[in-house]
Image (cartoon, rainbow, N blue to C red; front, top):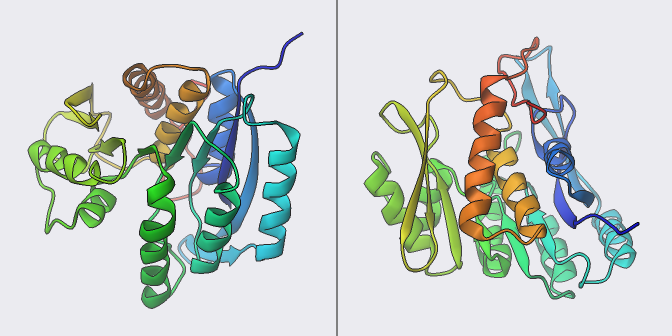
Length: 267
């Protein structure tokens, strides 16, 4: 027997199973990748208050212990790929950046969660700045949505696919590969994501399945790219496979008492 491909995830827990660490591990498993990881925070929606966010960061020492244990399990020849999701506080950003810097990674996929719901605006801004300064430089791939792409690129607005491509190129001055997600945020019949590989733009298109956001779509796309890279897939094929998985997961979305549907990775 040989080990399957292995990847690490550093992200927050989301108790409904629709986003975050839970989505990452499910996506890894669906694509034949063994996942290890670290919880950075716990987000518990409040069903008694319009499903608002209740945000609880994990203590830095516990963060360090989780990362230490995960990295001790597998050397870098067997686990050279990591996905970074929600971090949540400047302290968490600093702790994760220092810990991951102690290892040589082939693939660092950053899903740049720039809005930390449940926090005061000032705290969220501090986290965003820390993420750009300490985590973005470590990334080999980043997967911003429209808002995140606009923020990272320093643009006033992204209203068209051409704008999205321009943002990807701008962010690509700092990160080798940029997957900018258009989704349902931009006009048109298709949900279009774009990949900037440092030389050219590649578009990935699928017909929109409704016009409402589906929770976990962004997490799933980034996790699927991570899993494919861990298997040695080329970045262009990795994004294509991820797009197909997310599209099917949106088509067979899971409905619940929440005000949002969630992606079904097993579809």
